[in-house]
Length: 135
Picture 1 (cartoon, helix red, strand yellow):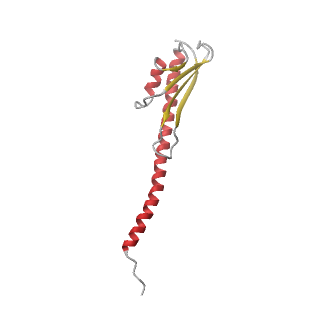
Picture 2 (cartoon, rainbow, N blue to C red):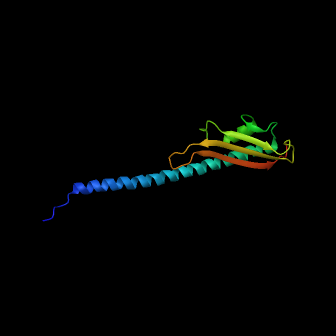
Picture 3 (spheres, rainbow, N blue to C red):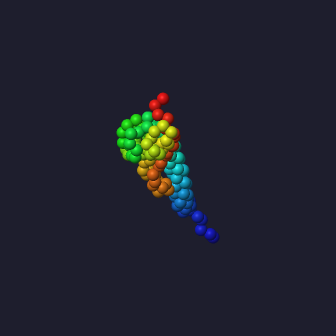
């Protein structure tokens, strides 16, 4: 006579299989969420740079380099998430930012991933326009 398998041993096997399967599924799901967040933040950086370069095109900055205040910084600040404590706005001009020169505005910040699947990096966006001066 063969011994009868108990349901108790099958339940243990099922629990172990579920645990292994769940780890894989949760890693893939959280990785997808993390990737989606990165795409969203990249889009926000690009939009912030576009808005800031639009302001820089009309009102060229007196000084180039990193901006921490002023209309260009405020235009970028209005477009990014409100929970970003630190982000950089950098303005570069070819020449002296006179009409006809090009102005490039870059917006960047440090990004921490939600999971170990994501990559810690810097999210950046930039936009280049031709300075036209005040209309």
